[in-house]
Image 1 (tube, rainbow, N blue to C red):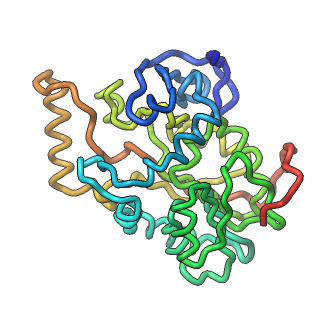
Image 2: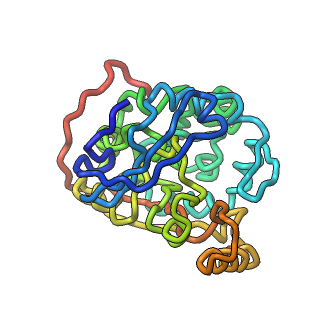
Length: 312
């Protein structure tokens, strides 16, 4: 794989090297070698460069190991369903915002829906709710919630038959090898006034990333792109999107509380004064950011090549 000079978030550049890592765990088992993080000097987004490629990413996310009991950030063994349910309070605030701003008609599609929790929290909103999920275990659980399920990868999706009221990508967009191409395509799927929810995007300009550098706990070869809030708006505003809401989830997640916040501050202080061993950073406000954008009524369609068949 060759290093690419173009940013896969804004399409510009140049890219500046930041950190290099050795892959570990499942990523190393799947043949992912050392990976590098580069920062775009045009928009500020970070990205894995060179990226592992779509086939390696599909193998990683389809691996049965990802749907078995594993350790969470607090080193507790949890099942996939427990991981999803632990985010219920966080996802509920997103669902309420979607309900408030949804246009009058159109389906709601969640790409990378997992077990379908976020879509199910929308309740009976009078819309078709489509869960796009390639993993069989997760897709079956989403179907059990009464959702329409498409077993597809994001990159393989065809345009919907009619414009969408909302497109959800919760902890999904930053895993795509070419999020810039997907955004250009998916933007045309939304009706005027349609909503775009981008959840859990990792922020490389957050406090923990600045202090911990290469030991920031969320750097990973299959987290492909790390856009800062400014980089997100730099790309979406020219597409005709306006920001409706922004969240920096922490206290509504299972890893955020007053006591854990104090512990993280203490660890960070010891790190700054060189009294703590080098260890991964803690969960902290601003590590990830969730954005809700609305497509403006007046917009210009961007022509992209679509697959020949339609999914829904």
